[in-house]
Length: 99
Image (tube, rainbow, N blue to C red; front, side, top):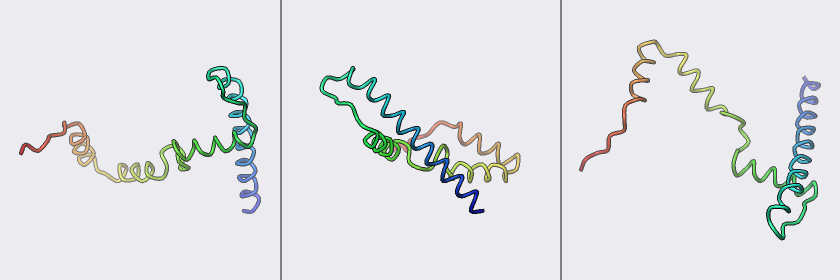
């Protein structure tokens, strides 16, 4: 159990190092050429930029997160009639309340 945790932690660290380096190289190759006055960044700034963009745009849940698995379990528990009713409800256009 501890060995498995160690390897997962090691893989996360390796991936972080590689992605930080990739962000640094891409930034330094692309951004100063596109925009006047933008300086090159070092590794730590690239890693910070990577974390910031992950927080702002992607979160830390991964693709789909736990929410998608829960919905899939609900879908699997439905009968064929319930699935068909769900599909019909999803394909119906939204109706606004006429007041």
